[in-house]
Length: 261
Image (cartoon, rainbow, N blue to C red):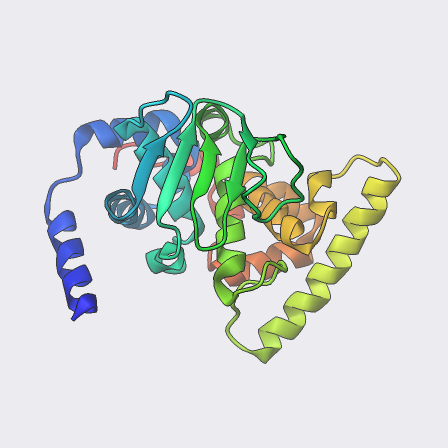
């Protein structure tokens, strides 16, 4: 019964034309959008409409959440699951948006190591909200390529949490994929930890050396934001994430952008 109601509600949402001002937000704010194929763009537009409608959106720190904020954040979150399913984020009821960086209250215990008054630009709470800095989300959406994207990072944590653990291993298809995941991820995590400990420059953000959960989130950021470099410098890790996300962002050449859809 509830499934039928949800499906019917989604059909009603998608039956309406995509708002032209929302398309303008996508083109202006989400650089990744123009690199998608027409079919991928169409699916992303559908998915983000469902995402926007089904989440509660709350502004914090005096911020009033606008449609521009909703569309930009939803597009980035839905890009992660473009090859999976929009229901992957069913356990995220609310998106809290701050104007900029914020302080994490001590009562929240999410994915990161937290101390009283810990400053952050994003936070994912198990079966709770995702909290984001609009300033950072917008800047990283408009100018990708630095390997940092707070929306990708926090929603990767939400995928990781789907199996009830925060360990850098989201639900996988079978034992073979799980064994390969553990083998590749362990090797790459150790590689980053050693480089970070020695102060070496790395493609993957050193924050990923904190623990396996942060490594998966950081690797996800790099996979979508610097796919060519990851494929060249970390081919096994790239191939692993390509299989999990069922996407090949390195194949989306900026020269083949499709700005008209």
